[in-house]
Image (tube, rainbow over all chains, first blue to last red; front, side, top):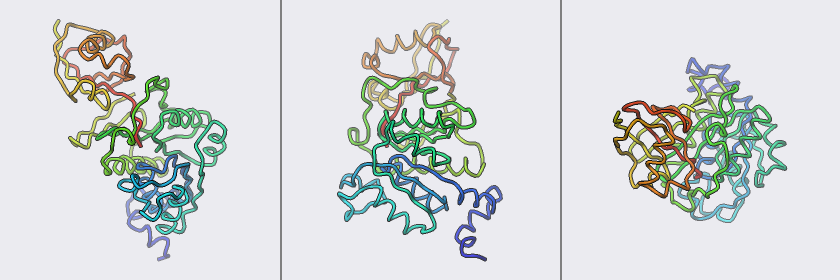
Length: 234
Length: 80
């Protein structure tokens, strides 16, 4: 058995994945926008599962208050670039994975050129304007994106713009006029972005391999405090 | 006809109403009328963006609500 096959044998053993599915994972290119709580969680598993090419967009620096939930960073990394620190941690986890970093704010100037290089996007931002930019760019480029967001103990997750399915604007057509509070303003228990980020990573693997039924046309709502899961059709 | 509605509040909406779930009795109404009714009770809802789902399906404000429906008020989330 080759080292490559041995590394992923527990996935390859699954009939719905198999050698072909693992090859699809290896040949896939995933862009993760936001290397915070959602992004760190999704990135770790996408890398360990063997996604061949990963892009990470984040202009932020690691702060002490990030460490409880942004598990790719440690105390020594405070003040360092998130994307560079994440790349180092992920390279250690899986040296085969090619990682491109974008130490910038995703903007109208760079969104299309960045997203066009990838098969799908994971929206792990904590800024509503960035979400609309990702949505509109993915619609223009015909790429699916996997949305995740949290509020205190609840999380939302959905696959948008997949096979002509609904987009984020089908759910919320316009940017809210009022500011919606994020983790920095409302607090967050570290495990929740971990859970939602992993849901995003699993949806990504489903799109890549064709496994199961993607959460397209539906928004999933998870309440960690009650462990309730709701599916709302869009 | 009087309707018994089971209403779920998510995210910031639950903070405004002070609860995540309640059952209310109302006359036969549309979603727009329900939203007006709730806004009278919870004035903080007035400035909030949210979608309304009836029996796990997002509906527009003109839709009528059937008896004993399960309603959900779903705002956008921003945290990541």
